[in-house]
Image (cartoon, rainbow, N blue to C red; front, side):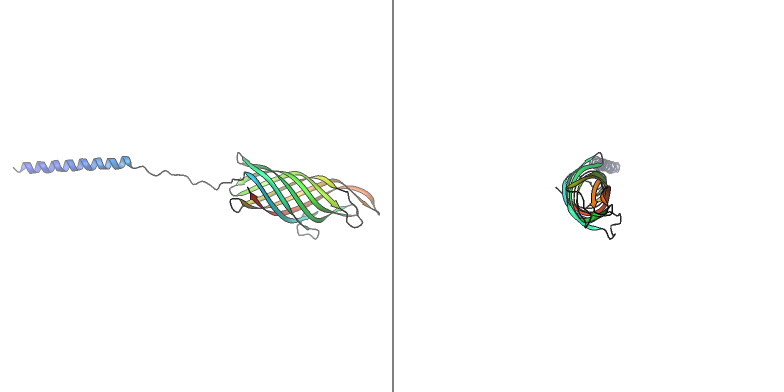
Length: 212
């Protein structure tokens, strides 16, 4: 008689252990660990059309704080696209050069307006774009005292570099340097006569862009 209760107890323990094993197996097989998504870096997103304004200094000397520096300001617009991690684009610019003076034989002429068409190539570093630029420019010159300059617009070329930083999704700020050279500029003075030379100027501009 004592063996029967003992056998029943053993059977109950076996059944309970089997049920726990099945439950644990069910829990193990149904549990799926959450997928790990590697955090992505900041998107550059430099592609698209944009327009902006700029202001700075223009001078025939590299030092932007020289006594010959004049205030310059204007508008610009362009389009960028990103190809294999490189930003390429084009930009058109209209600037008033503040009558910055450039030296010619015996005197100086004044630079009034400039229209430029530039190509741009840059390296996007997250929310920062470092770029170089080059293109063509048309500059209007004015007489300065006894020194007379050419009428109309004179063609030239420019090179430069800049850094642009995103402020919001559509708004960015930038700083850009340009060197512009204009060849075969003819001037006239009564004391020295007619002369022709190549002139150059340096512009440093800060600007704000809005991307559409």
